Length: 216
Image (cartoon, rainbow, N blue to C red; front, side, top):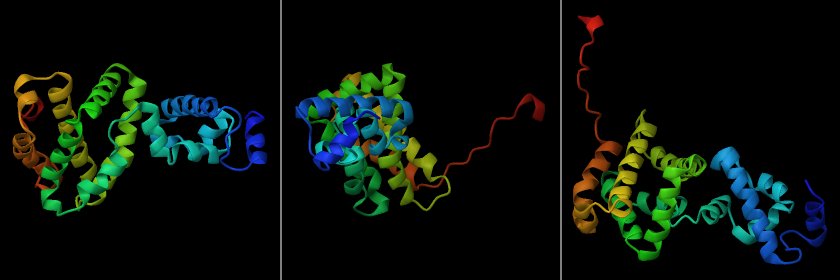
């Protein structure tokens, strides 16, 4: 760690030194490197602060929580750590419809859509970005949703939901498939919501596996 951290402590917790923009940029650079190396869950505010040469309180001063910092680093247009509470606020047997409606309503906003498309494209083309986004979604959205399910395969269920929603976002906003792009939110909620609900709370469909030559 550099001498900046002890100096920050002497100045008082959370108080910037010198030009605030420079300290903020140092934190963003350190956070970007830490999230890329350790993932969202493995990175810590204390570790990021040490890397930036500042007191951890300065990170909180500029960015708030680790989730806030992560969202700033990636310019995330949506906040699953916040959205999860709104999606989960209601009967479990209608969560699929609420989730689809919430996601599409947020993404239909022009500014959100623009930033979201950039982030999705970055995640598809860059392994580090993809890993960071996946770890953030898992920690802040998938785990809270899985915790509400009384199922031994809850993590698989919410992972299927994640793949379904990401596919919907890619088709509607990145690939802009004409019929999907032009469909109304209500129509998509009515069509996709039941599938999401089945993944979350429906009984798993068990089908016999095709026999292999060794079984014959």
